[in-house]
Length: 243
Ligand SMILES: Nc1ncnc2c1ncn2[C@@H]1O[C@H](COP(=O)(O)OP(=O)(O)OP(=O)(O)O)[C@@H](O)[C@H]1O
Image 1 (spheres, rainbow, N blue to C red):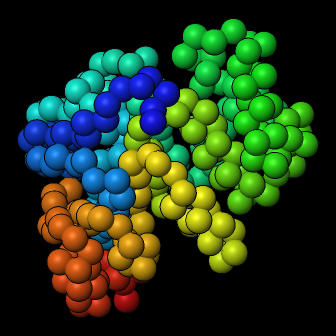
Image 2: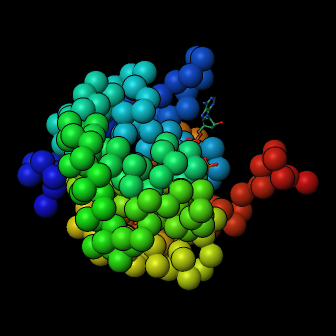
């Protein structure tokens, strides 16, 4: 179920491109994404984060079209907020408020709820998660894993049909990453997950492999991952770490 009660049709990109200062960072990309678990893989700089930012409406397409459940994400920000949430790689790039309950209430306020009601829902959510004691805590007192969890809860407050996650496991220790993976596995939402971990992608319904801003592979994990791993074994380290 989604917060809007809306049927989720999926994500459609048609010849979508992102260019910056005359340089094409992504595209043209044409994709219809309706599966529940989708992994986005590719080398550093291949365009994975740009693709998520495009779908989330944080950047408008320089050419082509993007639709999320029929909505133009960069044109209808308010319509999008109840349908799609994004979890950034670094929780500190996401968190705005100093206190946990304020952070959780923010999205609901954006959706038009009054402050008292939004804070009440935030507290209720924390209690339901067994974290009622977090409500008045400074965000800065939480660990990185706890801040990541807070960001996930904050996005889920709006009950979006789709979640975009940019390398959600990076920076987490193994048990914390396992806990987050278990939490994600229980979610009813559609998940688009940028990951460098083939084991994560192996469990998904579909894997999209980006290379140089274009789709290099697209299909089931068994159809895409072996070729991807072979290509990664053969690839140079790149200019940053290359010998
Ligand atoms: N704000 C920006 N200004 C200029 N170039 C950018 C900007 N953001 C991204 N790029 C470039 O766009 C390309 C795609 O970057 P993007 O961050 O989408 O890749 P990525 O696959 O997510 O990489 P990583 O795995 O390292 O996070 C890269 O060449 C990058 O240098």
